[in-house]
Image (cartoon, rainbow over all chains, first blue to last red; front, top):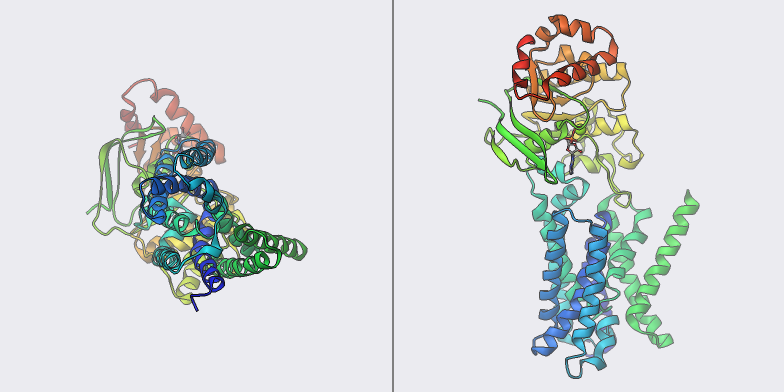
Length: 262
Length: 248
Ligand SMILES: Nc1ncnc2c1ncn2[C@@H]1O[C@H](COP(=O)(O)OP(=O)(O)O)[C@@H](O)[C@H]1O
Ligand SMILES: [Mg+2]
């Protein structure tokens, strides 16, 4: 069954939806959208390094995404003017990565695969990485769920309950880096942020509890992945952006429905 | 044994010293009220006691396994985070529905379980925060301006309720308040803060003092007058702690 590239593509999309949904909820609740972008964009630098050093791309992106996420996390703990700093880091990392990758022989040809994903070329080995990473992120989210939520509601309430909000922030950082490394093959660095945020945003109006929002986001992410893939086949459009188009359409319907409901 | 004790505590925020050389302690079961003008470091003191801020100097000692209940001055929950009152009470420890209901009843918010946190009025929100703080069976309850948004009778009722909770749970209470005249009878001790401890004492003694009668005889404005009085002469020299003498 895994011999069929379409089946592999569908499974890759579902694996990403699994990891992105709960994490995307935290990215939304904690206003970390730029944080996600900075981490994802830095991953292109990881691709360049991995290709130059003949390392697996997953290892390179994970390492650089982790470094970037830790850097951003440290800056935010220092209380710097975050919006600006994150904007500079997000765009700067992308530009540096794009320049760096031109020095790697042959990589230029593949560039759009890393920017927008190449889900139809997912190998069984890629699939193992995607599902391994996706399950690891989900397990991390389930394990720390209560502590992460408390910290998100209020770091001070977390301190008073004997939790350490800095530790929870670091756990989110690791989860984000893992998700970026997993998602790069599926939607590429430019659209990872979209797959984090859009399903969560579409789920919000129909959720009364955080758990429901995360589950609904996972379902919306999964539908977007599968429908986007179908769209890519029918219209010969790029698969990653097609998935994001479907997610955005679901968001538009959800927003309109909640506006009508009042 | 003291529940918590801070000695020579200095706390800085963004490079500015906010609290200087503060000694503060709470004994089991006592109600301590902290008063002081805006920006005097009351919230900073509470946040340091819960461990959210590290003092630059001095030390804080806690009774081992001290259970804290904390009600922050303000709490902004992001609009994208859906949270009902019942779900909020189950953070970080999941609790049974009956237990949540009991805590809400105790805090006077019994009908709110299924309401989204975002829909609550200021007073309802404070009560839910109080209910959550009570759920942990605290040894020490820290309340940062818990009566903001309540009118005067509402505040008075709230303080009576705090006394009842103290009697029932046996917990100590530290409360930040602007309404010194209303909390008087409920407090065992009043601490006046303005970047440092200006004065402290038993409220009955304070209430008997001629200065107090002159300043607190008439409503809310009296409380503010005390602050001005205390701070206008105690700030330019370093002997402000001696200022407590006429209170004791
Ligand atoms: N996060 C912060 N960063 C920098 N300064 C702060 C911060 N929070 C409070 N301050 C400053 O610390 C001082 C004490 O604030 P606070 O403890 O909130 O006073 P109070 O609760 O008595 O009104 C104020 O001057 C305030 O401006
Ligand atoms: Mg305050």
